Amino acid sequence: MTYRVRLARAADAQLLGAVERAAAARFAEIGLARIAQGRPTSTAEYLEAAAAGRLWVVEAETGEDAGAVVGVAIADRLDGEGYLAEVAVHPAHAGHRLAARMIAAVETWAAGLGCRTLSLTTFREVPWNRRYYERLGFEVLDEAAAGPELQAIRDKERARGVDANGPRVCMVKRIGKGS
Image (cartoon, rainbow, N blue to C red; front, side, top):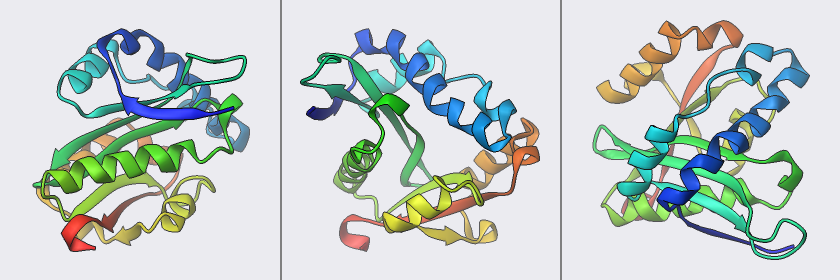
């Protein structure tokens, strides 16, 4: 099976919640049912990100799922730098480095805007979170060293009760001219 990463189109927005929900189901396997049942990004948020050129998808090119959207990544700008807001791959398509390919597309986007770093927030102890991002070159960032907009993201996560599911961490990777 082959895949391609591309910028999302408005028509993709209706498909992406199912991808996020399927990917989130893995959290139930490790006792984080609340995360698994959480609200995916809204269609309106997908449409906004697509219109702004900050939404990528992975599309299966061959195989029985040819033409299907099987992954999603959302980026933004925080504190003048790149921010990876979401990355999800349908579990039926795991193991093909699709998340890494989408993250690379986000890095290219951010570097093209002159960003020197790409940040994200994730669970510290979930095996496919912090350790995965470390393998991709991200490092834990002391939250006190985060910019005000990244700190605001963490405040929103705490207010929504995300931290009740396990410790969270900010991470950053040097990209573009900052790498």
